[in-house]
Amino acid sequence: MAHPIRRSNAARGVAAGTVALLAAAVLPAGTASASSDTAKSQTRPAQHVIMFDFDGFDPRFLEGRYADLAELPNIRALIANGAHGVADGSYSSYSNSSRTTTATGAYPAVHRNTGYYYNQETNKGVSQERYIEPGVETIAHSLKRQDRTSAYLQWYAVQNYGATYGDPAALYTQPGGNCETRADQAIALLRGEPVNSGGTMVDPAAIPDLITVYCDDVDGALHDDGFSDPDLPAALARVDAQIGRVRDAAREAGILDRTAFIVTADHGAREWTIPLLPEVLDRLSVTGLKVQVISSSGGVPDPTSEIVIVASPRTADITLSGRADTAKNARHIAKIIKGIPGIAAVHDERDLRRMNASDKLGDLVVEPVEPYHLSTLTDGAPRASHGALPESQVPMVLSGAGIRRGVPLRNVGLVDVAATISALLGVQPPATSQGRVMRKAIERS
Ligand SMILES: [Zn+2]
Image (cartoon, rainbow, N blue to C red):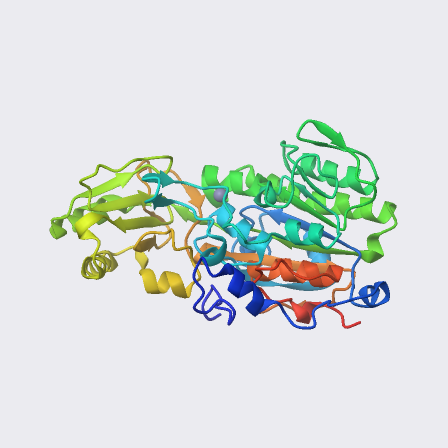
């Protein structure tokens, strides 16, 4: 595999703030430009799309190192009858930012949802945020604009960005619980039953065209104790089982032959036990600059700090401040850190731009080699996290109505999901989408 974060032609040279221009440039010519109902039905391979988005579902649960942890019969059945591959996420691989890439079909450089960084405008460390750059459309916006219905079950990336509580046309719900509770709502929608949406029972008039189901069971277990977490096999089995339950409900509702299924994730995970941050701080002392590590949950740096670090297990975001903010200092610091054994990469501004990362990240982003970590914890307990490049890879499974069988998916990414769902439903992708339709997976009509 070449570079994990694919660089699309459309994204080349795009900076935030040029969203309107971009939209004009990337709207694919001839994609579902149906003007009549007859034409629409010809360009719509599926009437419904149901997507499962499993937080932290590393592709190695299906193939490779961790494939023996759980059998995953339902995902494997979808793969056997559909298209499957390992897809690129987006950078950095934190949940909200990655899921916003899925929801918008745009890279973080455009949607600007950013994780684990120092926000210079608010002068605070940020862990994760609910944010989408004004003017950037989500799949919830674009489906509603095109008179298609959708429901997002705990799929928070679109909450108040196209979907809201109580809106039967673009419904957001937050059932809580585990994956089973989320699937219960999908099953209710398939049965034509009302679902709880922010305290109000909402009864959509018909089965929504798109249903997304978000589950974080797997990510939770990974964060706790890594890949050897005793609850991980059960979490994997549970999320897999929900696919079977929802599929059965689609069959009972009589729509199975018109429904496409997508299974994907926001990121994978890597384990960490050995602290590397003390070594980084020690080496940086030769610069003579004042270094400060701030908390990602609202930490405020001292005004005299010159190197501000938001340190998390899998990335350390480094911002140069005040008079220290020079290209020369950035180069010098990068060189020092690259020389530390256990460092995998130091991404500078050029690297970050090339990866279509958010401009809100710092001057440098440092990544350790597994099992080193850059968090402030030093207890050596085995845990897993994400944020860096290796774990930006995710599984991508497409199966069901309109999807070809036995097709390997290559060079696809989370950025392509919104365009692909739109193509399956025969509508235009979100206006600011940069992704491409996964055409190899879709049957020619
Ligand atoms: Zn996580």
